[in-house]
Image (cartoon, rainbow, N blue to C red):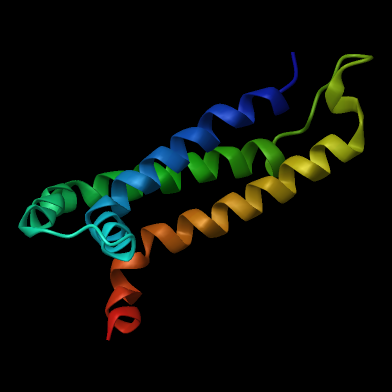
Length: 117
């Protein structure tokens, strides 16, 4: 089995961790953008104390995927999907697109004040 097939699990973990890290800020803003409001939206900031843990999990998961795609030599069996160089190229493109979105989500609390003002 190829190492490339194991890149999906850490990437999904990174996505979930980034959502958790930014849930306190992006969640209320998204609800307000959709026209949903109320005093209960203030309760969505309860995840704020856990944000550093989710951020660390995001960074670790992204590093694991980066390591698998770039640093670890690829070993493929004959006839495996990873023998095709386009598969690795596509996985790297998807990784960078997802990484940029995740970095934007994790850093959202730092630049959100400039978007709202």
